[in-house]
Length: 268
Image 1 (cartoon, helix red, strand yellow):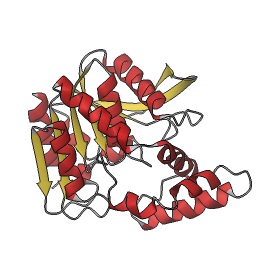
Image 2 (cartoon, one colour):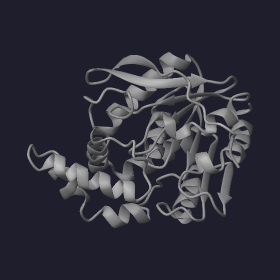
Image 3 (cartoon, rainbow, N blue to C red):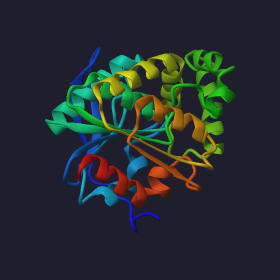
Image 4 (spheres, rainbow, N blue to C red):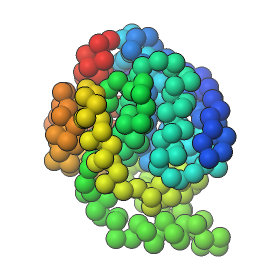
């Protein structure tokens, strides 16, 4: 089930200071408790265009393009804490008060980093998330990832490496709108990612007592259910939704069901 039509409101931008001033693009719609949605790698705010109309009457959804994706500045640090700080500053400026954080796929660790460091964070939602240990897709690419990420930065060979990696992503189901710079940015971020950091952020979230929700599908080709369930255990998640079908993009395929659960968690 999903809404009849996706939502694509006008894109806005906000300038924040990280290691340098960067412009972050976002869309802002709906009413009720605020929820900041962070897409995966690669991805954009459009990844939540089906979830948005399902939430519109109960939750204010702010969908942000991470630095280097969509319409946000490309020239940004690939240091995860720096990126999380920039997103948290943007959320504080846009929302101006308490908000929950949602992360899909590889947006989950970034959402955890934002929630762990932002005093305004009040809850966290993880959809088909990367967990606190390697999942099946990551295990598949992990042996070659450091070499590929390094080669992608080379002046001559780099563009060819990025094109090949993009071709692999498209074959795996990523949209054809995924641009080469977004692929390069993905590789740079994955090269710096550490599961230990994600686990530490989840522990901080649990220590603060933030309400948490996890959702997954049994037929997700990228992240197996056990990884998501372990993340839910680590965070003492109050809401756990497992679907028999829905694939990796449950925020689209199960938008109505997820909207009900999210609104309930946030009190919307």
